[in-house]
Amino acid sequence: MLSAMQIGVLGATGPAGKGLAARLASVGHDVIAGSREDERAAAAVAALSDRWGERVATLRPGDNAVAAAASDMVIVATTWEGVIDTTREHAALLVDKVVVSMANGLEKIGNEFRPVLPDAGSLAQAVQQAAPKARVVSAFHLIPAAAFVALDNEMESDVVVCGDDDGARTSVLDLIVGIPTLRAFDGGSLSNAIGLEAFASVLLTVNLRHKGKGTLRLLGVDGYKAGKE
Ligand SMILES: NC(=O)c1ccc[n+]([C@@H]2O[C@H](COP(=O)([O-])OP(=O)(O)OC[C@H]3O[C@@H](n4cnc5c(N)ncnc54)[C@H](OP(=O)(O)O)[C@@H]3O)[C@@H](O)[C@H]2O)c1
Picture (cartoon, rainbow, N blue to C red):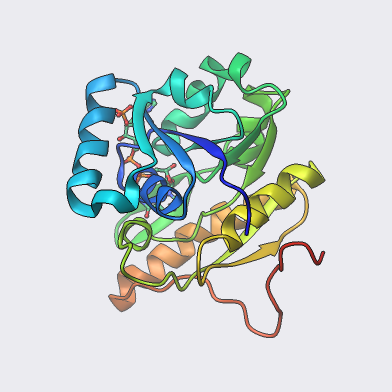
């Protein structure tokens, strides 16, 4: 079992960041749920505590700067339009740190979603440019927010992890397999994050058109096993 880490989540007042913060706290990590406003972070944590009680006892609120100062890992979970500026704003706190980008740039046109990608290639690569000394890893793109926060339910998604720093990528793979029933896969360098971000628009379009809640499940390959790779 991975030892408990201190993890900051920027923008943990939205469904994805809030759910991920709760899920990580539920497996014992010390999680700081961040927001641009202290009050919103406090309200998000209070709502999670009301719902889940002792299961999220290691969750606490803070502003995004407090969350970015978390010692082990920082997850950027703001709305996708805000990830680059938010990362740049806190870049000094992110030096040498594992920073997880989970953002998918999306626009809805008619009855489909389409990807929105920055000049850097992917949002994850833009996050890396915004915090050049951070060790950026891309993950969690294809998990619906509702699955994170439903702590009574097992998580059925597979998570592909991309990043240029081997140690950082391994830390995130370890983090993921520390969440019961989630499988993690090494997707190579950060250049490959574009595939995950762009596929999110396909997955959401399939779910929209088929009225489903499909997620990613890889067949024919075993997931990452901590300590064996
Ligand atoms: N929703 C999903 O199912 C899902 C799944 C996989 C990945 N993702 C990705 O996860 C991220 C969060 O998704 P979400 O649905 O939770 O997002 P969201 O609700 O739209 O936004 C999350 C938080 O971002 C903050 N925010 C809004 N505008 C901002 C700005 N201009 N600059 C900085 N912060 C801003 C807000 O927090 P404060 O006002 O409290 O600061 C907001 O509560 C997105 O990048 C998304 O692409 C989402």
